Image (cartoon, rainbow, N blue to C red; front, side, top):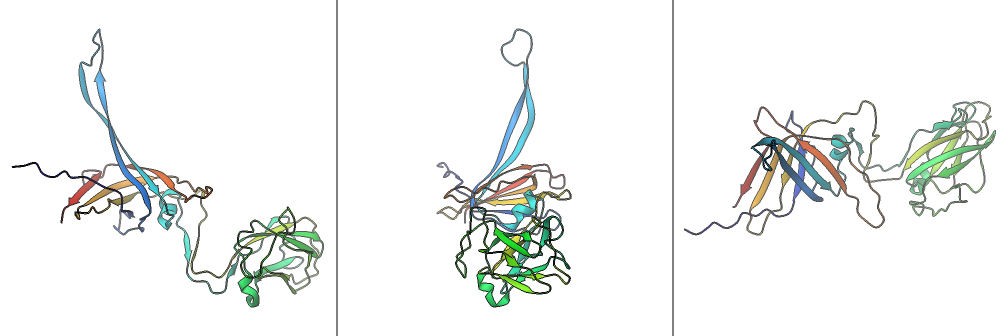
Length: 293
């Protein structure tokens, strides 16, 4: 009888975390650089006397670290490793302007003496640009507007910064009682408050804009009540040319932290460290399956 063919393992196909209580998947990642379960153990040696060699060796602890390199950013990455599930939005045919919020002082955004609202001007919604804006008071009744990035300035009406301080208004915009004034070329209008306008110079307020979109996501991380749940993890190796497949089901895993990297001319990769640990109900840390059809 000859030897059996070797049983190799090749590549990585997917990484799928699942809820340990319900068994439901959080989602899956297929743009994966690696998914390694590194089981490295320690040997505890008894040394003493004149001997240069151990008198006895016993088993020590086994480190069960999982190394993940994920080259996409699914929702579960934020939920499991950064503590907060994102809010997903489907198709938005109108565009969105967030609530105007005071940054410095209390008069730039004011229901009576300042700007009551910043809102999408429906007739020119195609001019909406994806960035964050700042409104700065330059006189009791006028404001300038600044933008944090010009990456999306060619959407709709092409725009450019007016100066090196990132101002986008060529001249100050007048704020009048219950009257809307458009930020030219940006699809947004500012509406004055209900009373006599009287803002304080240098007060500021900000808002964010999302143009018409197919889908969007947002999440705020770093909250004091954020949680990092345990999860199960199914890792699949790439199917080989003979049809053979490997599956690794890790019963209990936990990780905290994930990088968010913007690198010149490169796709971002999140390298994440996770720990696998003992599941008493299943009497193990993982189950390995291999199949040759």
